[in-house]
Each structure stands twice: as structure tokens, then as C-alpha cells.
Amino acid sequence: MKTETAVFGGGCFWCTEAIFKRIKGVVSVKPGYAGGHVENPTYQGVCSGTTGHAEVVQIIFDSEVISYDDLLEVFWQAHDPTSLNRQGNDIGTQYRSIILTTSDVQQELALAAINHLDQSGQYANPVVTQVEPLEAFYEAEQYHHDYFVNNQNQPYCRMIISPKVKHFMQEFPDKLV
View 1 (cartoon, rainbow, N blue to C red):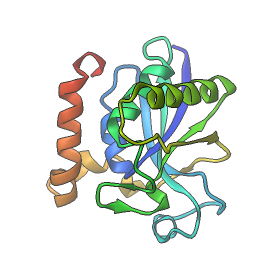
View 2: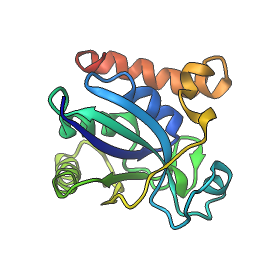
View 3: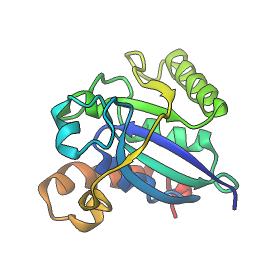
View 4: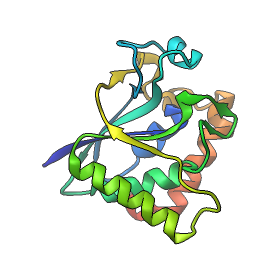
């Protein structure tokens, strides 16, 4: 097994965690915070918008099973990369679309993917996803881990996450565990 790390922010980390945990070749997914200026941020601080952090997921993946490009494809489908600082009803810079790269190769692939999406006309508006090197990842509080699995009857999970997961599973059956 050859593992690598990817870090993506595409709105609420409960949603992105629920999707990426279902992908073949993904070893682990942890919700957390990155891209800000405060060390050891808390959920309350990030939600206040004062830390500069985005809600993200740290994905450890086996690059012999799934490529970074394939993870990017999942990322684009898991959220709206043309929506600035919001996903659905979740509004604020903590919900921005962001890719935090762990290598120069990831940086090049992410920028090329954005260029391709913008040139393809797939979206009516330009992609606003930020791409920057990962400086630090701060793991979220334990109650955020496996949030969808542990809270499936919670209204946000039923109304927001469940339909996203169902749609993803129908669109990408070849990528599922």
C-alpha cells in the first residue's frame, strides 16, 4: 500500500466525510480545520468566521487503488465549486471550496482540473475553489467524527447529507467500497 494525503473543503465537513468514507482506496477520513491563521481552532471559533479556517476533511488514500485525480473528480461532484463561501444553506468562509495540497504534484493537478472545468463549460459560473499548500491540519472535536453515521436521524443528516450520499452512490457506483 502506498498512502498519500489529500485535504479538501467543500462545505460542511459532515457531508464531505460521509461521501469520501465510501470511496474505494480511501484508508481514513478525518474532519478538521485548515487554511486559517489561528492555532488549534475550535468548532465555535471556526463557525464565528474569525479564525480564517475552512471546514475540511483529511483523506488518507492508497494511491495504488485510487488516484488524486479520481479524488478530485469526487470532490467536484460532492459540492458546488462555483459557489463562493457557501454550500446550500451553510454560509460563511468556513464553508468555502478549498483544496489544500500536500505536494507540488497535487498543486499542479488541482490547478489543471480547475482550468479544465472552467474551459469545459460544465458550470455556468467560474470555479472559485481556492488552491493553496497545506500549512496545518487541525483535527475536529471527536463528536464531529462519523457524524452522519452516528446521527442519521438528525434533521440536517436526513435532509442534507443523506440525499447527497444517495446521489453520489448512484452516480459513482464504480468508486464505492
